Amino acid sequence: MIREQILARGVRDPRVIEAFRSVTRELFVPEHLRYAAYEDSPLPLVCGQTISQPFIVALMTEMLELRGDEKVLEIGTGSGYQTAILARLAKIVYSAEVEPELSRVVAGRLAQLGITNVVLAVGNGVEIFRDHAPFDAILSAAAPEVLPEELVDQLAEGGRCIIPVGAADVQHLWLLRRTDGRVTRERLDAVRFVPLREKAHEP
Image (cartoon, rainbow, N blue to C red; front, side, top):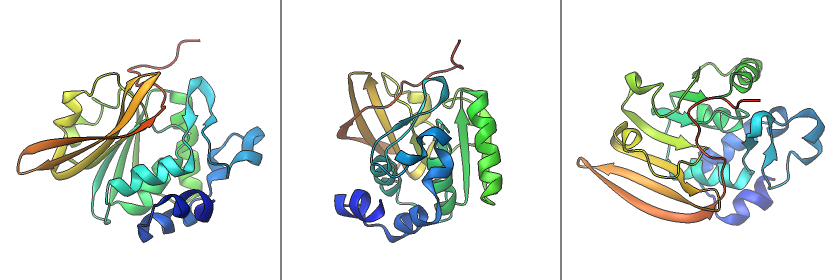
């Protein structure tokens, strides 16, 4: 997976590659889909959520340029795979998920892996960790139709944010950087993510 899906497509940060080697993706995939754990495609979870394809996880992680001392905000814990990768690369990760069931399962998985530098919470990812801002890096695994300025406000000086933005049929990754008090915004590749939600799925 690492050679064909990540290295071959241009991800080069050695710390990111090592993090991928240390986190087994199949642990974060539903048991009946583990045969597909190392395919470069998203896989469904409960409540309409997904685990992103490995290349996108690697690409978004590399764009944060983590060096090990950062405080990171993750919006959309999902399966916890991205969370575990971030935890290998940063000092602490604050991760929000609207679905209580997913957050509960991820807590167990992270404990199983001995990962202790993650703070999980259930709720609106844009709001729930505001008291811990500013963040050195922000990564969203869910797409708002419009970039929330209240999220941008939580980005620290020198910080970077990677987030998909747009309606379900037209989304792009955006890379934000805060430098000298100003935030620059760069539109990147077209992507498809689940929409950003403020509350849990109603059955």
